[in-house]
Length: 128
Length: 230
Image (tube, rainbow over all chains, first blue to last red; front, top):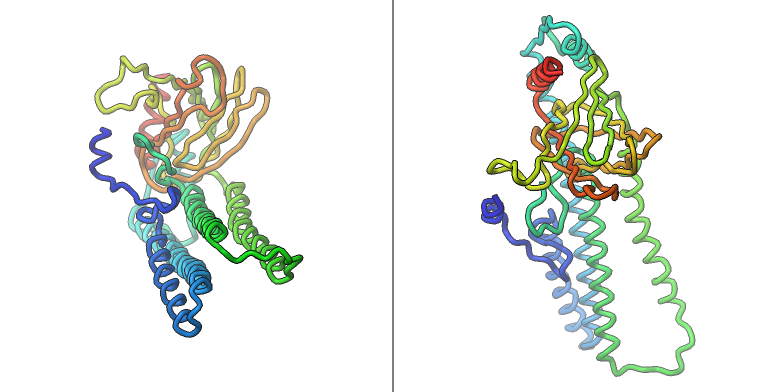
């Protein structure tokens, strides 16, 4: 059992030992964008001012801002997709219920259960 | 369920746990950036030759290091509070189950329609069949219909216990004389494991919780079978 699970799972790469960039959605893109932004900001600053120390500071600030910006942008898009996914799943589920009509005549638990479950469906879902 | 040497969360099986996972990723990214910033500042301070004994104050940096932490805290607090209130919502549960903690087993009661109750003991290691999980399997599972809101009322018969299922994002103390309530919806069918999470005596580690989410028809068959057996 453990061997099967180990074979199927990649070993994640953790930055600073805490952030698993491979398994955390949006993390890899955010860090890569941050690295690119850092290099770009630092190079631009150095080319314009030739100040080495301050270049590193600007580069680091560029890394932080680009990482944060990319992270939030990606997370917002992911959140919108998740909402859409739930709406689609709900729609598919309702569409299936339009076809399947549960006529259950067994008394007690099952009958009460069916009534309760069917009562929670939106109006017009069942077509008998 | 958990796999060996796991450090992170288990895969989510309920919408609330999915939200918790997303919030955890969000908070962890902020923690990572703060750690990187601190590391950079430490390295800068160690290697710098710029020292000035006459600096008395600096309004700009004081403003930055006051406003920035405040903004970070708001950035963390808002999603956190949103999930906190989301976890407290209980929207018209389809089924109510009572989970009672005993020394050292759980008992479950489905009393909405008929009187169905059973005990859930851990399967000892020597009685496990190949493929079963050590210290996690129980002889009777708490079976629930998938994608239905379930309310669980948790209490205890003797000492403190805690009913916890990590992949559902649930942990609730079982207190003698008190009824605690929690609710959840399972997003997918499957078997979800948990363990008692409050020290309760010698066999505290040997009273697992097993929740099995099945389609409605299977739940109906199971409940009929359990009623016949009792």
